[in-house]
Length: 107
Image 1 (tube, rainbow, N blue to C red):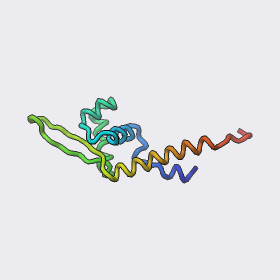
Image 2: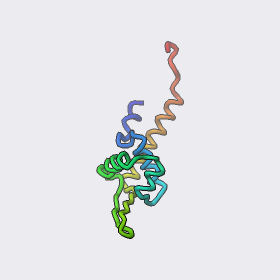
Image 3: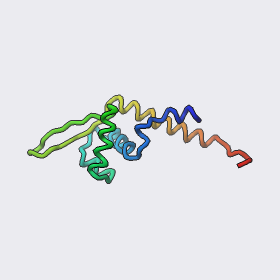
Image 4: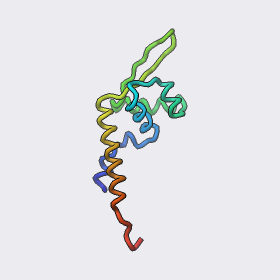
């Protein structure tokens, strides 16, 4: 089991980052407002997690102005896809391993 745990990506330990990555996996791109509303987060909370994912190069950020209003969108990178899929696979392996472990009789 130790090897499976080592395959988990620490960047995705946080539920907000997990939610961001899941949302970006199934959407080509999402705006800051879209992600904020989807995950029901404050601006500051979301911004800090997006920065962490951007720093890890798991997401790309595009900043535009539409009708003089800022519009920031995010999309997952190839590295982000690869790392997130590996994390999900490790979670699945961990769950499957737990199904095969029998509790000891000594409790």
